[in-house]
Length: 168
Image (spheres, rainbow, N blue to C red):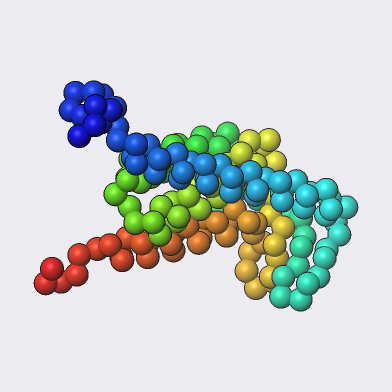
């Protein structure tokens, strides 16, 4: 053992810090990308314009609730407080588990945390989350929602991939 990571040093091994730092950096970058795209959507679509691309349309909507507008009748401070607490718990779990996760699970965690942070920050102005991707057959959503959904799938696949098989 090196002096830096030996018993009683009070420091964590470098790989542990690196896994956590990389996960946080990716989550922050994804949240920033989401917020930039939401700002562009607001600037381009604020006059009610709809851009039809066939399968997907761009149109501006605000969701004061959470997924599928659940909780939209609650005061914005309640939605902000609840989602903030969930994100803190999620971040704590992901950061404490990152060193033991598979790479796929860490990627899923970064996507999930980045999408959640993007929607949370967007929600802080009290208007709700900016949604702009519309299919006609599914509720309007945004890039952060895609990050969250893909993150859950990648995290689950990474976890299943590392699960012990029967007979092992």
